[in-house]
Amino acid sequence: MQRMHIHGGRRLSGRIPISGAKNAALPALAATLLTGETVSLRRLPNVVDIRTMTRLIANIGSNVEQGGEGLSVQASGDLDPTAPYELVKTMRASSLVLGPLAARCGRARVSLPGGCAIGTRPIDMHLAGLRALGATIRQDRGYIEAVAPRNGLIGGRVSFRRPTVTGTEDLLMASVLAKGESVLENAAREPEVVDIASMLRKMGACIEGEGTSTIHVQGVDQLHGADHAIIPDRIEAGTYLIAGAMTGGELTLEGSRPDHLRPIITKMRQAGCEIEEKDNGELVVRNDRALISVDVTTREHPGFPTDMQAQFMALMTQASGASNVVETVFENRFMHALELQRMGADIEIGGNLAIVRGKTALTGTDVMASDLRASACLVLAGLVARGRTVVHRIYHLQRGYEGLAGKLTAAGASIEIVDE
Ligand code: EPZ
Image 1 (cartoon, rainbow, N blue to C red):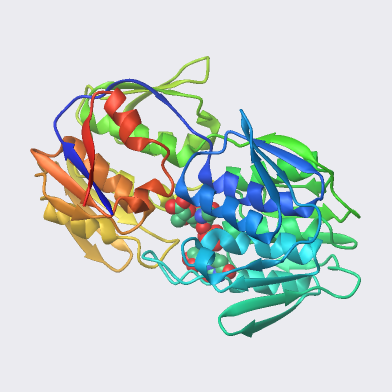
Image 2 (image 1 turned 90 degrees about the vertical axis):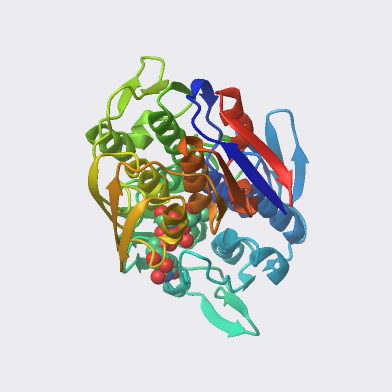
């Protein structure tokens, strides 16, 4: 295992390139299973989860070739519609192959993903949606087996009890080859859902309404190959905006989509962060004035994203006043708060509310990463803490941030990666 040593107190200045979005690349890789023709994907981030998903689709039978610009994938020939435990246990987003395999092969056998540090994370809505499209679902020795009717999935009405990002993506991919029309109600509206819909449309799917709560799909007989560039990662971009706001320098983000960052930028500006949106799409964050505490409640898009809650909490430790941080999406997403307390932060936790009182001077110490975004929070805290912060178990970080240490070091941070 590896750990990250961060020597805090340095101002960050410079340019940071934003990579492709992990949470758009994962459904995009799964969607390549929907056709026997070649699909080219560009701007895939070089992170562990993408390598895991690539291994999974190759395991199923896809031919995956690394090209100059990205990956070229062809799921032709015999496919083994199985997502084995060994792969799913490392990445629960493997459940994204359920829909494509049920649609393309008529059946899917996927190891039930376990929970993780932030919650139990069931997939009951994925399964209920597949049933609504005519699939029969059964559980067998830790695996979920979905079997489509003899003539394939049948278009139907999928009504989510609450918005689910990968649930919406899974059922979108299942419905594009179903017979007849499907309607996804109370669908997730995240930019990553919009991106997978645009990719599926390039492959010949008939989809309307992505980005709203109701998505209409007219099933087609088959899909064809396409070329698709993954959208930039809004959570990575938001993380670097906070890094710039906390360290008092000037960071320019290259290649992000400010329109995907609207809830993050709005909330940061309320806290006194100076964020400039340049005509060329670049974002510049400066921090030359005191930060003020603001309340934040996480919501499904277009609300403030839960994947930015931990990072925003780090920012609030450096703001004057009390900030009420309310987490409404996951049931256990304050693990990072306990580690921030060990660095000297004044945080009171009660249920899904954390009250952060600042401004507190943080002190570097040994801290433990528990999940992807908690890791990012601890790195941000380490950037401003006095002395050295050692973040343990940074494999969590490497699952979803491409070259984070390199990007921050290039902007002036003092970071080393050390083998444990
Ligand atoms: C996606 O997870 C993201 N992952 C998560 O990002 C993100 O935090 C989450 O959406 C919310 O935005 C990927 O896209 C790969 P949900 P997902 O289904 O789809 C409950 C990161 O850091 N639920 O929208 O799994 C669920 O427990 C990761 O990059 C059910 O009850 O999240 C949660 O409380 C972390 N039954 C809520 O719904 C289901 O069948 C929303 O979860 C599905 C979900």
